[in-house]
Image 1 (cartoon, rainbow, N blue to C red):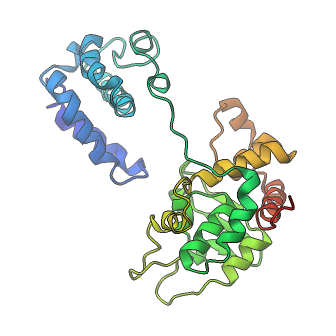
Image 2: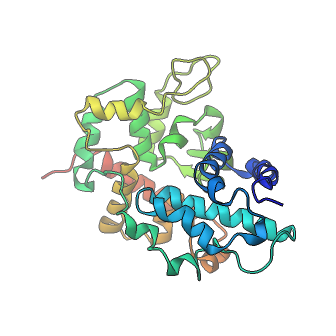
Length: 302
């Protein structure tokens, strides 16, 4: 049986797993990368005949030019070959596996090209920046201020709804379906963040905190970036404000690392640590976010 007319099984694999993928475009991306790079090398081979030399032939031409694409492609081939083994279509080691195979043949992706970090404003400059931002009263500027005050991601803020917010308790609960880590995230709302929300207009037929021009839709994902451009701050990205928050927390405060990481909804990498950490450190994070809001909204004396 050919591996990718085992491609029928490939499509079965994608169909079976895409319900667990957050991004609806993910399935198409899998098909596209496999069609573009893998099929021409291993498309006519039975699963048991695919070896490390075949996978290397697929990856080597793009490993340095498109390291992220190549890394994802290697992982996808590995998963499909694992599925083939589970169906008794092949035996032995998986030739696409990184550890023990490709880590001996190719440099790590991180060393092929330096990681490009999102440009962030230095934490010492943030209060003056926010003071300037507060002068703009359009909805996009308010969305950016809310993003800064909550240390949340752009997508989490733009897709937020009034149903997720408890103004009395001062809590914004983001459902797992909208979180990168697929886990519900409670955000403690500082007084500044609450006041911002209270002043927001509410549109009939649109439950979003930051409604867009299209009926029932939120602001565009370019809205906050355009605010930065109008402020002549093309050097910044909205995602970078999370880095500013993290730098401030590390250099100015005494909050433990795990509290700061929870505030950014970062996944705990250490499995043992994750197993023992049951709570979300909410009350400690409330104090952290109150301190952050007080710092961010008061222009510091020089």
